Amino acid sequence: MRLSRGVAVVGAGMTRFHHKLHAGKTSRELFVEAAREAAGSVDSGCELGDVEALFVGNFSSDAFEHQAHTAPLMADWLGLCPRAATRVEDACASSGVAVNMGALAIASGAYDVVLVGGVEKMRNLTTEGVTDTLAMAADDIYEVSAGFTFPGLYASLATAHFARYGSSWEQLAAIAIKNHHNGALNPKAHFQSEIMETARRRGERRGMTFSDEMEFLRSSLNPVIAYPLRLFDCCPVSDGAAVVILSAAEVAKRFTDTPVYIRGLGQASDAMSLHDRADLTTLRATRVAAEQAYGMAGVSADDIDVADVHDCFTIAEVMATEDLGFFPRGEGGRAAVEGRTALDGDRPVNPDGGLKAKGHPVGATGAAMTYEMFLQLRGEAGRHQVEGAEVGLTHNVGASGATVAVQIYGR
Ligand code: COA
Image (cartoon, rainbow, N blue to C red; front, side, top):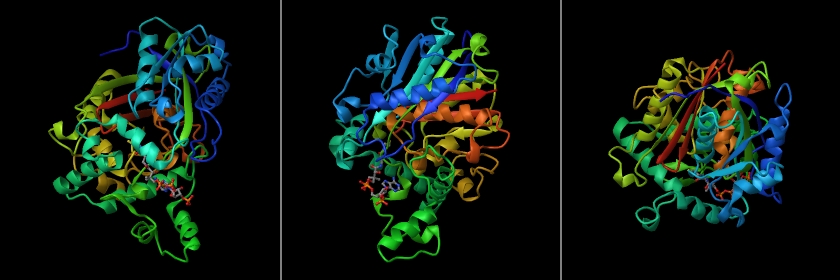
């Protein structure tokens, strides 16, 4: 697979991801906020009027806000009508796939400039309502009716990984500690505190003290959600939006001297139900999408300087770093414990805090990953910058791996 013409990211914006901050706002307001920031980030200026088409990743404004037909609504609120506006729904990979759709639309020659974003306003519902809504992305007949929720599905993947490779919950905890550390450096993150700081705050309220993170993570303040996954193994429920502006490579210099190019992309699907998969310790769709993206970009896993991977649960980061080829199968957890995926490690992963700490407004996550690469490869990520990053990768998973989108970026 190759693109008939090059595609660049020339602007990017996102709201902070949070569970309370956006109470009272609608997804259209969040999307407009992110789109305005994206337009404002374009160095030589970009009027939203320059945009020829809009792709919106959104999982379920229908259930969360009783509002379907999201794309023309966003176009209207951005003043973009009558331009083409398309909603992309692929569960938690909605806007990762939307980035691919936008890039392919430009590569086809149909458009020179498109706006791609994602949005989700989840916190209108209680945790029970959110859990029920998210479960619609699993197989209703064979999984949900058998009692599965998303924490439960990923708990099954964790148990299988532990059994095959001897990986452990302590390795998962290392990922939570690392991602909260990175989130504390990211002003857009949902959680902006180290786990130890949270331990002190939550402990104080209950007259409990902890000598280190692991003591807190093993305590009743980090309850089991679905064995072996505990609270800090899960991403939170967040509201937020992210938007990127893509242009044809040949016109990118009109907008900025420092575009970030999409060098490769890939997308794959897999059996929806876990019982139909041959192996629960790997996501086949990640391996296939990554192979496409590496092939198109002409790079290998060893060339990736920085990656944002889909860590909706800590076990998902272990599997992603193995399936993307960063580490051999069964070694992802140990690599995290050894600090190899830390900001200053040899394989920095989720410098923005990942879904675990940055948050996961599901439809917005893929576009937020592209936003992060726009910052990282331009050296603009501030305190969570990976020094000298030149090649970046994003990996966005829908549900338990039935959809995966991967992109590779370069300067
Ligand atoms: N990690 C760490 N802390 C979390 C957290 C998380 N994932 N989720 C909530 N908290 C914190 C809250 O900030 C709050 O802290 P505070 O009392 O200091 O303000 C406290 O825990 C209680 O928050 P609440 O929202 O009531 O938690 P909850 O028990 O209702 O929800 C989960 C916790 C894990 C069930 C929920 O976050 C969840 O469902 N996450 C997974 C979402 C998901 O499946 N996404 C799709 C992935 S495919």
